[in-house]
Length: 574
Image (cartoon, rainbow, N blue to C red; front, side, top):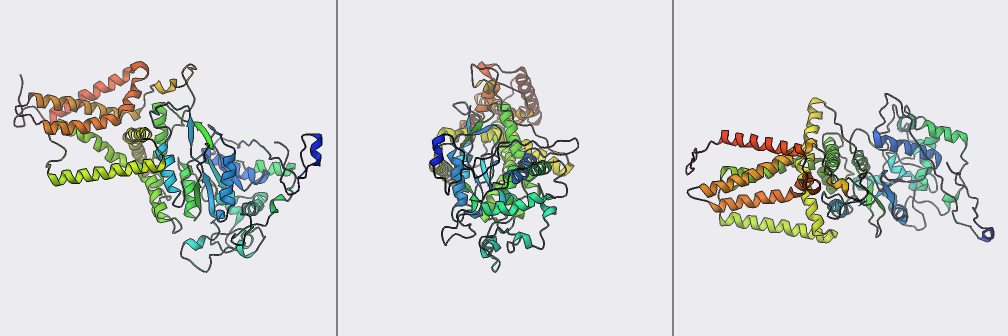
């Protein structure tokens, strides 16, 4: 650890002693490295447990009112972005903001972005739209938190947004200059709240419990205008801090011990929430559910940059982990259907979409098989084609296209980026999302725990090609369903064309309709097929084996269900 921040000026040159530092905070920030205690038999709760340990240790050492969360593969690309995030929280009305979410930007992605690693539709479209509601969801990195919001308290004036009047004014507004906190009913300060048991909620550290009120007070906006509520007077943050002694260091070590969280609310109502693979989404949802709001801050220069998996297998495993966490949220008490009145209606719909989107994979898989079924059976998907139906289909199609173009134009997303996201939505929906739904059902019905693979983001050893990892082919069971769709569709195309060629009365209209939808499915699957080819078309042997087995099984199954010569007009060639 470096020297603890103190108000003494730090001079670089002898002639700097004449400078006037009055009213300027010249304290050097303290840097410390914290590692959690690890023992056999204790569940360290992965990232969420590490973050909770850091929150408690930093409360003892520095107790800064704001916390910046970055993944290990991200770095600060624009240091001024931190100042922009703090300006949101320190502005008028900013005391109701729980966190500032920055967009994720990635490096090392192939120029064509084959597997939509940039997630432009999500970060530049969906997240911008959520910023107009109660705020964007927490995505796990590139986020600046208000420490007080992580402690599980309601925001100031929380009851003003629920229709409950008479208790909509917090005690901090009625006692100027006093560092007070609001409890569950947002009506009384923390130190006199009758129902708030600090050791039961936060643990037995007296030093940590005393730091809560200080952090809340330091995070208030500056009361430099009569319209600022729950503010602090100017100059209140220049008070010298206590020196860092051995007792404080020992207390910081104690609060990150394995046993500290036992019988407390950490991981349940305080800090990062446990029990889900996507603990970041659940943590942000709990804050919004208490009435907090968040802000999406898009800076002109990227705030943070990181790396992403460009290999098909690693990318699908990453999507599988996200989808699995969403299914867990849907089946847990964090389902937005059970949210409080403080969660706005449209925000509730947005969180419902977060938990429900993997289930759309069931309908997506059925849709991908329908063109093949049409070509196999010789019947078009729609039995009757009349003018009214075609007009209705035309109007719906034009409306959807106009909506997509409007969203793309509004968010500044390029058409190529939008198309890559559409392609990978089909690939991920037919593979990772479907597996996530099955795993979620197994956990709910049979109690089978869900395991996930950590995302591999290391580059290939080939230093001559920075995109060498893009061409690696590592077999995974997630390939089975997309590969089945491709093989079935190709077989259906061959069978459909052959039927019309050798048919006595060809029906080319139905064939062209089925071929159009079949090639539409294959166009979405093109990046997946290209990923299987590897570098220079060197397809692994197991791909040929699976393709051959699927083709044989499908052919035998179709011949068994629909023998040749059973339908009128079919010719049997001997």
